[in-house]
Image (cartoon, rainbow, N blue to C red; front, side, top):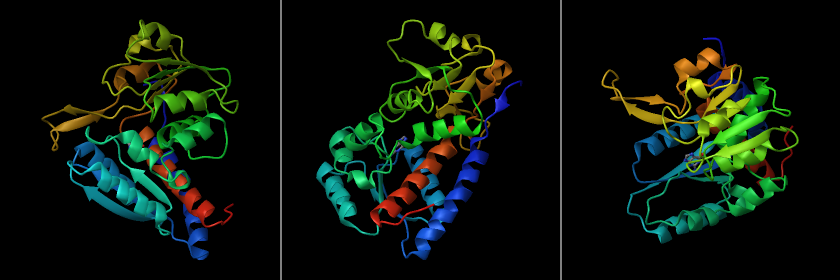
Amino acid sequence: MSAVLIDGKKIAEEIRSELAGKVSALRTAGVVPGLAVILVGENPASVSYVTAKEKACEEIGIQSFETRFPENVAESVLLEKIAACNRDPKVHGILVQLPLPRHIDERRVIGAIDPSKDVDGFTPINLGRMLLEEPCYIPCTPLGIIELLKRSGVPTNGARAVVVGRSNIVGKPLANLLIRKSVNATVTVCHTGTRDLAAHVKEADIVIACAGKPGLVSIDMIKPGACIIDVGVNRVPDPTKKKGYRLCGDVDFEEASKVAGWITPVPGGVGPMTITMLLSNTIDAAARISDIALQ
Ligand code: GUN
């Protein structure tokens, strides 16, 4: 392996120890940061993400309030719960784990979250503010990726970045953050309609794979020395594992790490950063709502 391993777990721990001081300051001022976590159904990946988020909250001193609904919950029930969280002074952040079941209008549900408590940064108000570079909450995975690049010393000024994937949660907001002057990359967004994915990826100094497809980015596509950020979390069957599956990203890690300059592992790369940015946004929301200035 020639690539530098970007250890997301370690960087996330460093940031969490910085955040712990902010939680102490809030608690000293009589404010316990609170996050409402809403989960619908029993999608195993969603259950595991929500569990990890709640554990991280507990470890840092954020109170989490979990509500689980069955898969067949009525949309009106979900909307009532969000309205109650919007009103609850103990709740500073609201997280509705996505995806939601098909009978529920995701837009309506996300749109019901008070933007000042939208710590996922998914509401139209926060996404609009992000585009305009106004104070807002920025989606956690893209924010975590920018932080990873900065803290790993990956040069971004004038770099060619290729984002593979165009989701509302990752690809679209990430492309937008990468073109900010503070990052200053030149961005191409590839998707299922892209004619020659390899030709685009081959030009990239920074590749962000966020399509949710194992093996999407292979060694022959990678420019030597490029930085590879793998957002994919795919469960592939593996009878040698106790759980019957293993996690892998969108990138062939073993091969790619032979030519890349930097690479993130899966797990232990982007995932811990997503959770850390959620903690950070929740702490900021608690401070803003309570009118407390944090250092
Ligand atoms: N599903 C996949 N990623 C996320 C995330 O960052 N937040 C929420 N709420 N749901 C998700």
